[in-house]
Length: 372
Image (cartoon, rainbow, N blue to C red):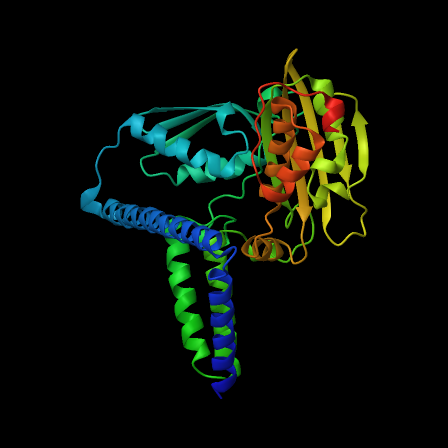
């Protein structure tokens, strides 16, 4: 029964050894592997430290709340402390908390400012449950719609207080506990081959993935830009006139393959270039580059790309493991353009740099025609 597993493990081990001990590229691969492992260890230590401190603080908070509920622990609460408690609760039920003023006098809380009508009742109910609040004076100015009121523009709708497991982002302590539970459930479920334990191991794996990534599971298999899309943002300054930068950006020679194949969807000369892939493409990519002329010899570039890989974020994670990181490829391309314009490379030198990664330098800037 274990022979297939042993064979697969042996093949995987052999392939790994061959990959790392390759005579030509093995040294670089081992260095990259070592750096990634050091980074992983550092991130793990940091995560454990944050999670342990968060768990300690939550336990202390539970103990303090329990003591506060005991009759003999009741005591006078200062108005300053009541205001802080109320202020900490407002953001959970109100989409524009900064538009509301809070004042407490002998436990009597006065609310003033602007608020949306449908948020008044949840706010009053929440504040009445704050320890130390004896009553509420409602002086809020309620509006059914934001309309032209600046203080009520934008904002994020609030759903009130929810347990961590129902929130979009889990707290560090919740992620730690659910991760440990996921490992335990997966290990226990894999020890026996039956349906109940198979379900248990599956739930354990999902819990472990959810705790590591801190993303709702529905995001992983989503193929929409709103949920499963991966966003790349890059800003860089190039010491070159904006028209030269624009001309090189319109020439796809210097970009990686995933941009070369994108048709230009719209453009504003020396200002904006946008790319978009057809809707039926397997890897949905769209991007935009905005060029700003800082002065006569310096240009600021802001680039934003969004792509939706197959299987959503799972596909993105697999691509990164296999070394296909679109963000690093995009950064390399922009730096290549920067060197072409600032160091006066010829087209031949730039192509050689793209193939071998060699860095070139030159004291004088070349012309755009030589580079493009």
